[in-house]
Image (cartoon, rainbow, N blue to C red; front, top):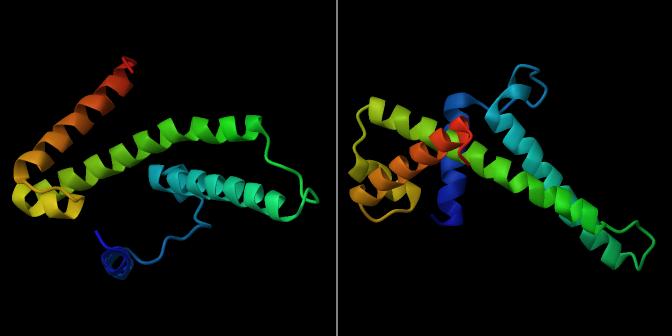
Length: 133
């Protein structure tokens, strides 16, 4: 999906759902909110690292422990994204979209690929739920 396409998708969704209220205390526990917070933390770590390099040591450096902590977030982020994608696909199917219609919006070339992706996501999430992964 091209950058313009992403911007159009965001604009459309904001038209339906409105801009997220980052101060809504109920939203804090939602997977999407946690994903937003984790992504912001990762961005700040990378910015801090770049700022240190540009400041010639005047700004404290990001340590390897900090980077290890940042890497720890990725498995949870993947799980959150998988959960959100699965929920959106379920809603799309419930609303009558077939796999052929869903596939291009996931960057996939066929209905079979979209269906298989959904099955892999469901299997992965179930394994996580059961503690297998």
